[in-house]
Length: 261
Ligand SMILES: [Zn+2]
Image (cartoon, rainbow, N blue to C red; front, side, top):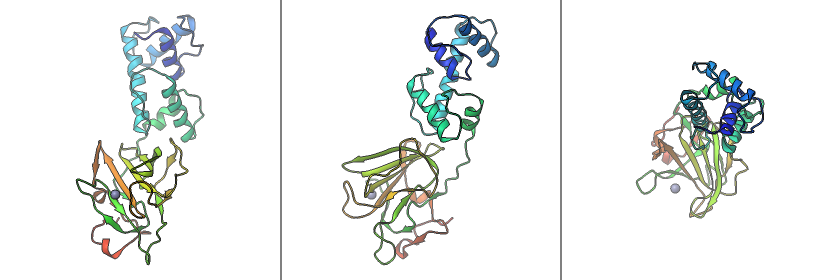
C-alpha cells in the first residue's frame, strides 16, 4: 500500500483530485480525493482506501509515466509521483503550450494521447548527401561527408524527424553529439559535430531543424557526420529509413544507394 503522503502526491498530480497539502494525514480532503478518484475510475465509491483503490492509483500513474516516456522522457515506471515525474509533466506542458502546473489533467492527457502518425520517411540529416561509409556489423551507422566542389565541408546538420532532444554531450569517441527520441520510440544520433549544439535536453525539435555543424571531433579522421538510428533497441541500417527530400542534393557516387521521397 502506498503511504498516505504518496497517495496525496499521486492524487494531486492525477487530475488534481487531492487539493490539500502533502501532510500524510488522512483528513477530509484526502478522503474526498479517494471518493472522486474511485468515481472517476469506476471503482466502488466508499472513500476507503483499500486494495483496489491502491492498485488503481499505482496503475494510472504507471500509465502516465509510460506515456511521458513515449514522448522522450526517461522515467522509472513505478506508479509513484516524485520529482522526476513532476518535472517531466511540467516540461511536457511547457513544450506543448499548456499551462504549467504539474498536474496531469484532461488537456495534458489529450496531448499525451495524440500519437502523431509518424511515417518512417526520415529526412537525410544533411542537404548535400555524400555517403563515405556504409552500415556494417562493425559500423552500425551511416557516414555522410562532403565534397569540395559540391557541398561545403561545414555543412549544417538537421534533425531527420520531429522529436525530443535527449542527449547533447561530448564523448572521446563520439565527439560532440546529439540524440533525438522520436514519438515512435526510435532514436537518431548525430556525431562528431564541430562544436556543442545549442539545443537543450527536453527541447522539442522538428524535422529539418538545425542541430549543429558537421565536424571531426572525437574519434574521427576528417569532417563527416556519423548518423545512426536505433529501433526497438537495435541499430538499424539508416539507408532503409532515410529519404532524400526534394530540396536535397545527392553526390553522383551515392545516387544509386539512396531512396527518394
Ligand atoms: Zn561513422
